[in-house]
Image 1: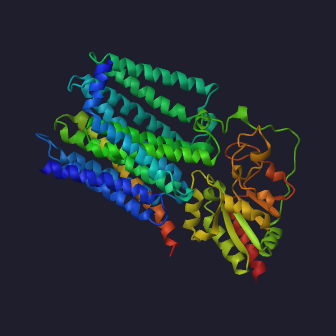
Image 2: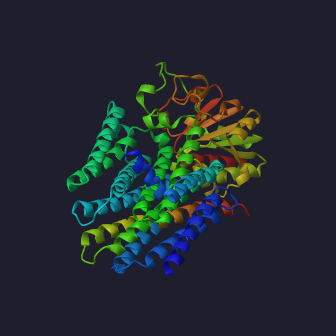
Image 3: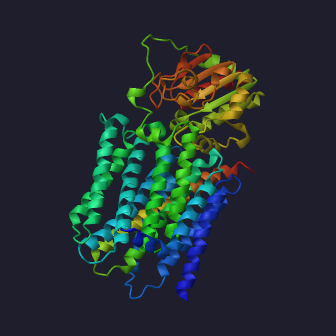
Length: 468
Length: 105
């Protein structure tokens, strides 16, 4: 009776996940969807705490202690984190979910190796799968975090022929897992530990050669992995909501990954082999020094102030400098003088799709001012002034005319079609993907060097002088 | 595993198989029409849902003998990790989405 009731609660929980995700895919209902999914999780956890298990010791003190500790850590990190660091935070949370699955599988496998429990073939296989995917998601997500946070540079973690190393590692991992599986009559703890270590290493090594610009795709993929490991663990505990929730995240994560790849006009395989940021594929630097023209604050302020239409193209530089509120002030100053200020959002600007929308929303910039790539490209020929703030690869003309460039074929914002272009950038260094950008030497382009926030503040001061 | 065993396995787990296939299709369908604006919050929300693995950790502790400190401590570690994933994931998603709804009014 009670068991049936609790299974019904699981059913409601799983339904909440599905409807919640559905609502999260539309701007009007997104927040409700998140609340609904949270509700589903809360009732699922409560049901798990009280589902009757015959002769179970329960150990509630351990459970509640751990739940309170984890809850506090999770909540504080979620509330304290800067909006700009959101992508890496998601990666950390995702990694911990993977770690949880790996810890579960390790515990069960150790019990089995010690002879404390007996597994059938299917259970052993599923535990091994949970261990592999969970461990890979853990170290992979942690490296993705470290790369986005700037703690690790691509060249620190890659070596020549990295893809071959990865293949060997993967081969060893699979061979070891099969070995453990086939030797199930004689379980040895050290073999299982070796599988775990290999999986942890592979997760790290698998993300290592992937360029920073592709990190969102990787995080999304690892998110799918964590979902699959949760689903596999659900099979072990014969728990339907783990199964449904896990598979849902698995398939949703894979679709999201594919959508992101499409936005960059690349295949998933291409991303995983590590095309971006790979020196071998870097566009030719033909050696002759081209000169970029600089613009002064005063000139730029005057040009902006007397433009009719201004289009701002934000990129990761804006996020790093935390400059979204200063942009909003510039927008206010210009709009007060009748300038039509809009923003052009490339689908993969920043480090994650939607990253720029979240940032600009934080600064209270109205939704209708944000144009997506197609609308922006239509509006560009009639735009007086384009201000590129900390973006690089998403405005690179090489996407059209340089087949040797890694960004060739990627849809970009055609800023050079506007009447004037000013690029705000910290230095002439190539962007995150490590690709040279001919836009900086274009005859319509002028450069303004410096940190996005302080540059914009100085620009605001200049505009204010004009205003008085 | 020979073919006969395979068929037996499929026969015994037919409902599970249905569940598997339909959930995969459901996941694809739910996500396939999303504006790119919502990709980040959506990924974050899906990530929070994958924290459902915490249920396994809770079940592990509930079934462990009170003196089996190995399982208890690893289970507790699992609960802490899962809880960070769940609470942090939903809280971060909510923070992102709050900013979208604010300026809609």
